[in-house]
Length: 334
Picture 1 (cartoon, rainbow, N blue to C red):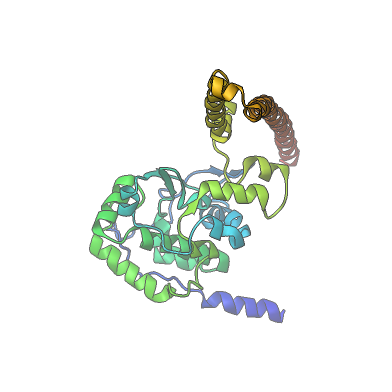
Picture 2: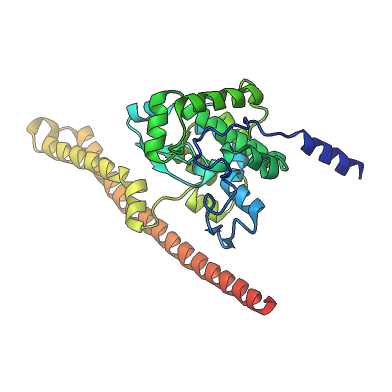
């Protein structure tokens, strides 16, 4: 009981880190993000339909928390630096295109010329929403502070604010002066030099998706075939896209082998090298090794395809069976 009381006293210490003045120019002073206009009618988890207005806690956890990244936090240095993310205008300068994601796990994750950014939920700008729903859970509070901090990184200049509005990342009603005032209040209460009030995911800025996939394949929090096959976030599930992404390097290798074999054949056609026993043996050895490499590579590709085919087939069957079982149980309980 004492522990419970101590825990309750800890929750009371949590307070909204934002000013009461909303940075948006709301036409209706009584309007608030806490209504049906700003949250979806439903959303889906992996296997369940979720009604945000009915199960608000589950919705906020889905909207803000990053459990998969937290699970590999001690490996995140392989995927990114413990620095601020680049502002939006710099993202443009380095040739990255902004892609919208609603998954906080994908926020500030990049791959090649793409960076995925989660739009800032309007309720994070509302003081009363923080008081009513975000200050009762320490982990949720830290996740919300972290997401808001990431926007302090992304929107540092007027040009960043313009890009954020054009990309749909921030409300179009936010003015530059109001945004600066809002961030100053927030940063004064956040202590950004220590980051003790934010979720540990936000101790890193941008994260590289290919590295995250490798971490989840080879040093995952829990070893499973699913983690090995899919990684952190799998891309296209088309076999063609998969093999192009993972085995296109073979084309360069085979092209190099072809060039070397042609050079060896040309060398053997000359009188000078044809008489060299060492050169003949080297040519013979390389030709045999090349044949073995080609056959072996084709075998590896076939084995990978075979394993993936049966993995996706069996996992789909198991998933369908699990969903049907759940629906049957819901019908009986209803």
